Image 1 (cartoon, rainbow, N blue to C red):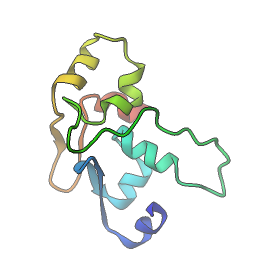
Image 2 (cartoon, helix red, strand yellow; image 1 turned 45 degrees about the horizontal axis):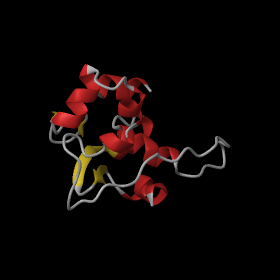
Image 3 (cartoon, rainbow, N blue to C red; image 1 turned 135 degrees about the horizontal axis):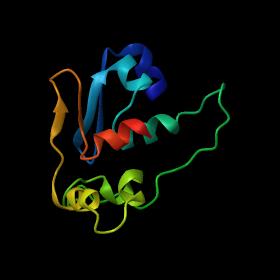
Length: 119
């Protein structure tokens, strides 16, 4: 429950298919999520202040026993899905596992981190 995590933790790690895709101090994660999966999780948390409609992720959750090649999140990633098929960004997502960007206390694993932080 992310609402409880905000008040009980100092650092949060977000996992997708058993891999950490983002880790940061709790306030940083809630105020400025960088990975598209983290953003989707936080947008799914109900809020009394906001009545914005819930937009679920599209696609099926891949099997952790047979994950997709490249970034495991790409079949459901809003950034990947908005790219033209065959673009350099989409090729990178389907061919390479993203590296961790940041340091030991705060990092994100996303090929398109500049796009992820703008959306």
